Amino acid sequence: QVQLVESGGGLVQPGGSLRLACEASGLRFIFYAMEWYRQAPGKQREKVARITGNGITKYADFVKGRFTISRDNVKNTVYLQMNSLEPEDTAVYYCRAGNNLNEHWGQGTQVTLSS
Image (tube, rainbow, N blue to C red; front, top):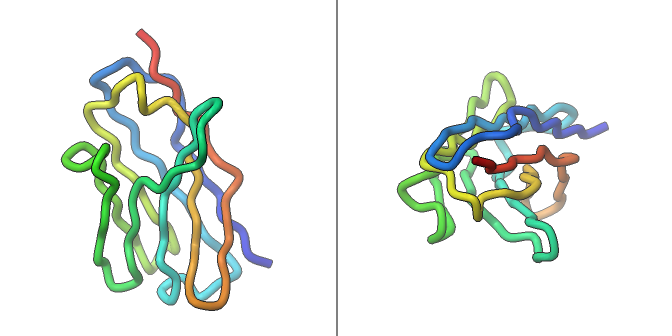
């Protein structure tokens, strides 16, 4: 049974930082591209960042220079380091594992910006 479990969300002030983690189990982690998505209230889910099994990364324009995605293929975990957070970053953040055959989603972790 595949499970993706996100952690690290919370309440943070604008300009602050958070580090999200998503631990995967039940799959061959290195064979999956890992992605972070987010969904703000009343908005569609949008992709934030992607990292392939061999570490190639890609970011949405709205997080370039602020967020960093990384992965540990021994711990089966993908991370999202979020710096210089803005009120517009408030959302539920989801991780996704995908390849040509399958996709799996986590349950999400809430990130809230509040002054």
